[in-house]
Length: 194
Image 1 (cartoon, one colour):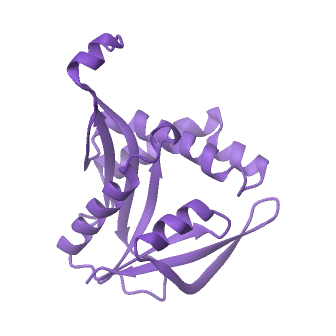
Image 2 (image 1 turned 60 degrees about the horizontal axis):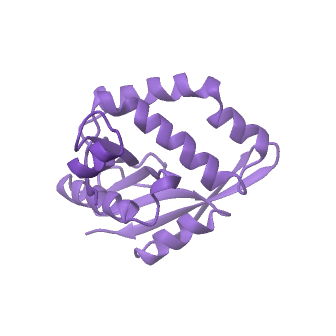
């Protein structure tokens, strides 16, 4: 049995964070985004770009109110050795979340935060990692004085919309259209954490 938890991301987590993002996007967005743009966002050429961006976000975030969190599983030492892992009880990044002050012009960044990313590796879903990441994010945001959180979700991403709705989030009427070989609609979800 693996121990699970959430902690602040570290520099050494960056390759695992990038890999998790790419695998999660490929799985979650294959029916949501056009094939060409999804391949550009998740193909081999994108990995270096994402590694640089995640390293910057982890090592030198734009402000103290920007954070990257990771969900981790720590293998049971006996199971880990039996499966041939070099380090018994080693931590494995299985999800990530990032947040910061909201940047939409109609929102007050002093009191409204934005959940920028919430992803779980497709091989580790349905184990509570998404909920743990969301709860840890909200804890940090409350400590930083935020009272509201928003996030942008693809309108066709039913799994994420259902997950957020079950956690008390709802649409706030804002939307945007991305041109990605076709129009892709996003909706802004919000929740009160005050």
